[in-house]
Length: 319
Image 1 (cartoon, rainbow, N blue to C red):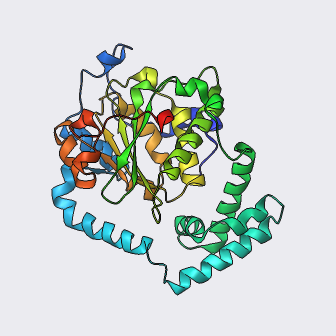
Image 2: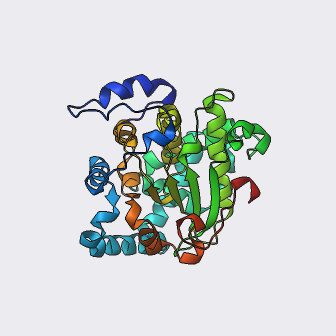
């Protein structure tokens, strides 16, 4: 599906997501009241299957298949000896230079093969599509982050919400971020652009914490207390576009925890815009299985203490 710019799609989203199902009953705008109804196991399964995501309630049946899948992905991630892929990487670099030989894009010579490989794999090894995607990224980065980084002063309104924390690492060495959805509100001062800058700031922080050979990160999205006041469709779409278009093959896994019933309506709107590869990495977690699910991927010493682990919360601006 071709994704449109998030600035122009909010109105179209509502119509394209309509269905014969009854919407959730109206609730008080107070976030706490919105969370009195907690989804049961069937609701969680419906959220997951609506966009082919996974859920902790499926893990017994899918354990063996998931394990084999992850092993294959890990083997693929470290397979630098693939002759076909190496040839395509060289061709990708050449095509990207030919598409725009401007001085800014000449920096492609400084881009490592690991970065190019992510774009190549995001386009199923189609060199022309990968080159176009990579050139688009370079142009966007040069225009949106002209200094090469986002300073805290450029995202002051977003930082005040104190909604993101950088934790330890999972069992594969991937850095873990924790995001509190109930602390996010549509930015009416800095607007959508400031939120986008905040996302880039956060991604850059995550990348800086990656060890050698590691390219992916893990996110825990905590929706406890989330209500309609936190619903920011344009912001969610902007985040998806940036992640999928400019940082492909970076997300390792997204755990969504403490899911309130009212979130189901928003999920139906957003999920059609999530590409297939990203959907496979999303796990909706039932409250009763929260710690046990996290333990499958994250050692107890690295799990946030609010979930029964031993890692204290570290605000992103302190990392």
